[in-house]
Length: 249
Image 1 (cartoon, rainbow, N blue to C red):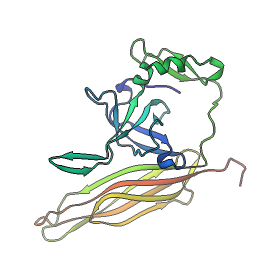
Image 2 (image 1 turned 30 degrees about the vertical axis):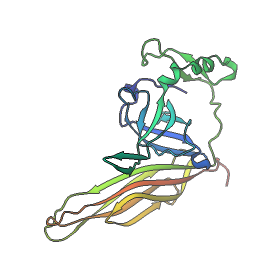
Image 3 (image 1 turned 90 degrees about the horizontal axis):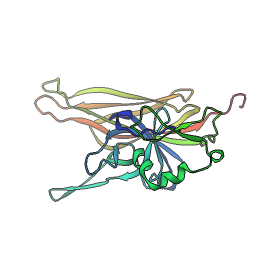
Image 4 (image 1 turned 60 degrees about the vertical axis):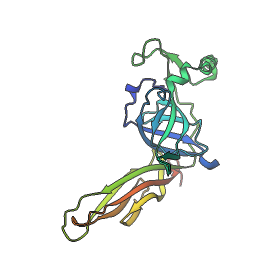
């Protein structure tokens, strides 16, 4: 597979995916965004809001075109400031590919005989001088078929902080649509709130063919004379199953 090593090739906001076996469960696919590329001395780790749990460490991190970006490392779950400890969500890290290529391990990987690997080493104009990229062979894919079932987590965060009515609360409906992975159909959609306030009518409906799911909810905010807010922050987990091959029932 191609390897991207420069931050400009995967800027902040790039969608990323992490494969792993969180909590020793079945193979799971989580999705999120690149939050930042770090700054000294943490530039050796890129930050992402992708969901990670014990069992994700060491899993591949790649972008939507299948290029490898790095290896999942872990995240921060507690933060202490001013004598108070707070729970933390969405501050996770992975080791970028440039660090992997610079490590002694890469020399051993690159030394694997050509007939034992499905990739080859080449120079890539998009990569910094003297950097190495790995590209897929032009022949048929040797990759194994994906798992029969997989889970994918989406981060959802919305706050209603407007107050258009003077003496009464005001509501607004929100929704997010998620697509099934190619070759899969959605069979279950589970919202998992991390923090919610004045959130109502929470549903997650799957279309008849399992090709997409819509997570919908209503948030309420207070009158302009009493400006309380409504919000929903958490994850939506899609359980997906592989579609039968063409011609199978």
